[in-house]
Image 1 (cartoon, rainbow, N blue to C red):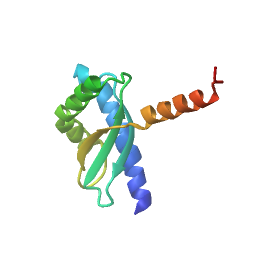
Image 2: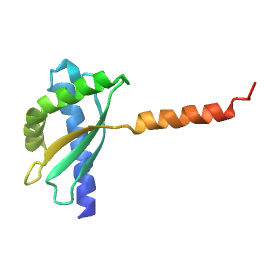
Image 3: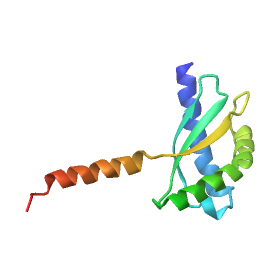
Image 4: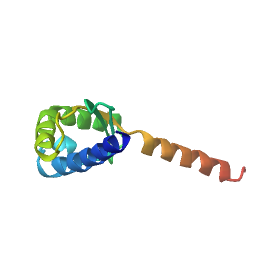
Length: 116
């Protein structure tokens, strides 16, 4: 069962990236990249993590609003592309891991700079 969930997560990530690129015309989602997907064990809900190039909160909010507006189109398109019984509900969340990694890099750089 775990193997199947992992395979479904990979397929959803690939398909949602493709749908965003080719089907969604909303300018708010133009710079969005899907970085990961978590699917519940019963395949009822998929949490889709995204990142954007801009690190301002307002741009992230706009991207999230655009994704939520396109949710129906994305889910419908996924239903046609994926061979699973029921297409999961979609929940979009911003992936903070990149920003967190940059913060850790900054802290490490500060440690390595000699005191004056």
